[in-house]
Length: 270
Image 1 (cartoon, rainbow, N blue to C red):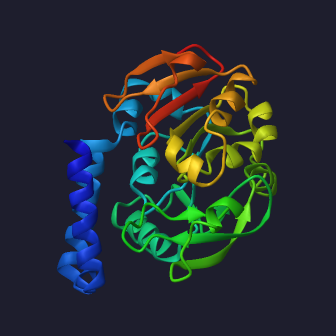
Image 2: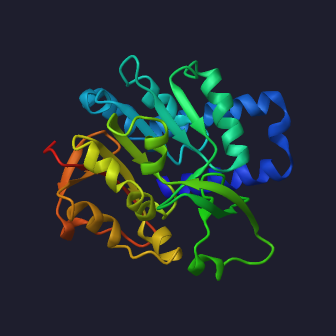
């Protein structure tokens, strides 16, 4: 039922976007509030998690990798302790514009530092494929994915950073408490670029969207994400929409190819 609702909403968004309906101020405002309402009550586990496990969000700065238009950044900004910041990363230009706008509208601009860059295993430049029908489904273009893209599809180049280099350059390498990653199948590459950050912050918690179908489309092994954390002594939990956690073993991580779950990874038992 939830999947049907999501598909219907995506189709409606695409139809309105093609007709430039969101240029109208009333529809623009309505779309913002509708999206935040949908995320809060039908999909997002983080608002509940910040209530149930507040201590996870008060251990240092927070990294929101794949911030989209800012819903999670707004949630996280209300959970961090004074003096800490949410560092939000969103490479796509229109999403980033809406992200900056939403941070102001919800009054959290002073607690969120937004960067219009992609995040990966190393610094450089990346191509992203722009999904014209779904603004939350833009993808990093890997060699394998490039072969599947039709020539008429939109691709643009964006700067890319690794988390290790980003935290070093911002002098916060040992001040990270929570990391959220949702980058449409590219999560493992992001993790390889933050190995030193995880070593320097042993109490940091990592929340990741695990979508094996998206990983497979990019040519990334679906077992690589869990393997990355298990090899480094992390416990894996399924983060449910209720905000509650279910401990997983590697064998428990069974998700349909077109499905997804939120994982919470922590060296400490939660």
